[in-house]
Length: 607
Image (tube, rainbow, N blue to C red; front, side, top):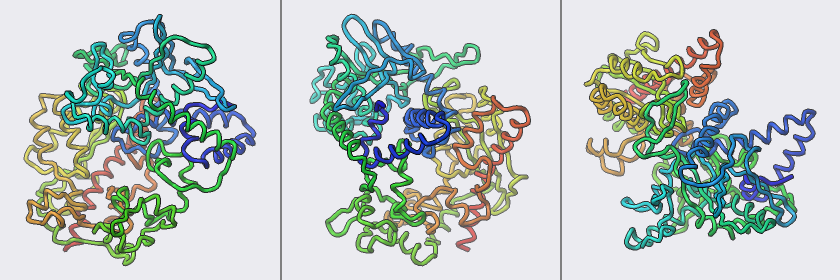
């Protein structure tokens, strides 16, 4: 059996992965239906592909089958678009397909192990072979590498992006050399966003080059990433109901990045990694290994065996519940990494001695676990509540985080708004869950944003306070809608100006409390903490502390399920559609009434 590029990247994580994967195969092979094994392999491949989609600020960690099925068509379309548009930038013949097994493939035997990779877009002309790997991430990740004034990548005259050194630019004149070197070094870290994709194509290059040695290919081989252009704004053209992504204002929806030189510099590293894999396969040692960054815990691309390896952690109050634990802990001048502590047996919050807790918030967290009592800064909470005016409008959006823009004015990965929920609290504590609820849910996948905006603007006065939870999300959506619908721009921006974040009262907002006369230290300290929060200020963690309301048992109970339910509308029979539509209304309604309940609970807690 060949080791694919995806398996290479996983196998090199740690010695244990290969052994556990081998045990999993034995179990799968013992199944009556071999079809289940094939399904498992395909699902693993798709999960890796789609894991690349949700690293653009989308908190979608728990990838489920329904979620994969929802997003797979968009990933396939990104690949086809990249292949179609490539002819503008590259000459010669192309081979690409949405089906992996119809793509150009390479395989090489290295140390008696067969490696295999498929090429998203294979392009060959008289002079070059161009290997183009498609990733459903955005160009923004690469353009942000550099100083505020300049990126380490620059578009060449051919429209392709290059590292500055590959354009023969004088880097000292263009930007500080030390800044360039520091930012370029990030491309070698496969655990960062940009570095993950560079390592991916470097493994591909390693396999391809070893394959080509057999055929004595003399053509120059170049390597490129094809990514979504974050500057592309869809102009709203459709054909037979499908969006047409033509060039708009000189921008194509796909950008191409030459990564030939950077992947060349990674070849020694990948070769050494292949040696590690060889050793892991020979040993097949499933013994526990130290946890570390390579587990990519809580990332979309986390190791699939994390549930096994992280079973050393207690389900509640683990060391990972400490806020800002990624910075580690200090004792004197010695810094302790979070994974080093876990590997040393310190797995619970109570395992960390007091003299290592150098952050005040961590000391409070530990005390809450010991005492079983919440921490409440009554004065800050009271002063925060005093900022709230009535009637109060509790607002929440549901969005579809689509890699490809669906409607006019959207960009790749726009959070496309399809629903809002609104509860109007007339005076403190006076709000009925049903009678005071208003909302809008798009009935299908056509563009209903104007109807949504119009109704929302009718409901919310320009001079009244709007309460949200974690305001950056709603504020960004309101700003986007304001520029897409200029006739409602003034109203939407006024609504945005009146947004107040309930998290300011639960957690804090430094600038708010400094303006209210608090010192910087007290202003930045959270206002409320309960041990059941386990380090999270998610409203789903906060709600049970102040109310009997719960998301448990709801058919649609989180953002991913809401997105998947909305995506299924066009496939449902009338009765199923009506049922799912209502469940989605109930979920969004719960989100805004949860804010009513939490605010009321906070008010009661400081009476």
